[in-house]
Length: 478
Ligand code: SF4
Figure (cartoon, helix red, strand yellow):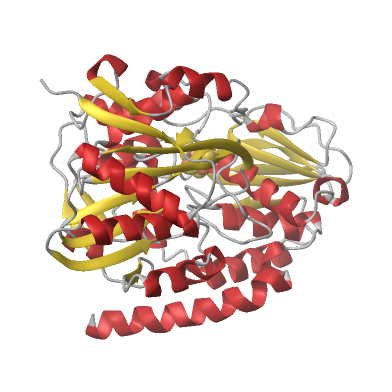
């Protein structure tokens, strides 16, 4: 059987012409000819030149790939770029911050903001699937040739985000947070059944360490290319010394027959030998600590972590609320590195917790997430937090919350105001998003909410209303 081929090419600069030449050469070597409706899916989970400079696939990379596709394509019916950013921020804001619109215009490509287009159901049939039905944006369903353009990054929920994980960004907010729990890895595997990318090019020129929204840059100087997500992700794991078996979504996807996860089944080519890459990345950093170990016991934000409802992940909820808390705190640090020192004391309680919390006199409590339960005394009053967790089978993908940016902000502010004299608040949801964590932490901790920073507040609000208007028009006439 012919092996899947993955190429690692050297590229130490964001020069669009050089990137175009490398990507075109990669397509030729892999025998890739884009045709029909071609859709490029970058990773623009969040973008801002000052606050989030390393979280996204760079515009120069997109520019180079668009040039390569134009020059290599066969019968091209449409060339488009589509994405849904993270943390409920409108994608059009992030595209602007990433510098995409002029690049897309220059290449006469179309833009699909996946938070503005119709979402359509797709039936899943693969054995081992988590759900029978999953919603994706219409352009994903209708494209003939998907090109995946991830950013090479470490990830606090899932260790690495490469080709497979980049598919979380095809879902809009209403559907993205479903199963974004300890089932996140299963969800990523489910999404592969919707569509397979025909070409993958990873922006690993400047890779990201530790976090996915606020990564620490790492000059990796590489472009990774292939035509099978499992093969590409397997090579990506070896590039930074991760055992592919530890990348759970890769394991689940490979087990479902989507591709290999054994290096012996992959032909690794290019001009950047894997051994040399590994030597270069031997100090590449990850952030895979539980929140009760990650936040110091002496700090103003401390965590009490209990047990969790699903048997496969009873000791911790990777993929859910704890990771969202870490990302939220990193966002605060991006705006003000002193935030945790300035914050009023908060105890974050998640999971099924038993026994006293031993709070400091001025410490307030967040009981986070639907799975959380606790019973005890707070200021002489008996408090009972009941769990309201529902397993995936009890969650209907057709009936989901909108997860609207403004609604979430207003709900969090109101909840904190209503409970201003209470020792605790209950954050309801499964999962709780990064945005919700930011809103609650800023209200209870009395620190600045990044949503109100002028660098974000005005342009995000403008993008939000344009997004709402475009979405309404697409519903009526799309
Ligand atoms: S509510 Fe509990 S089970 Fe659900 S995502 Fe949060 S921590 Fe995980």
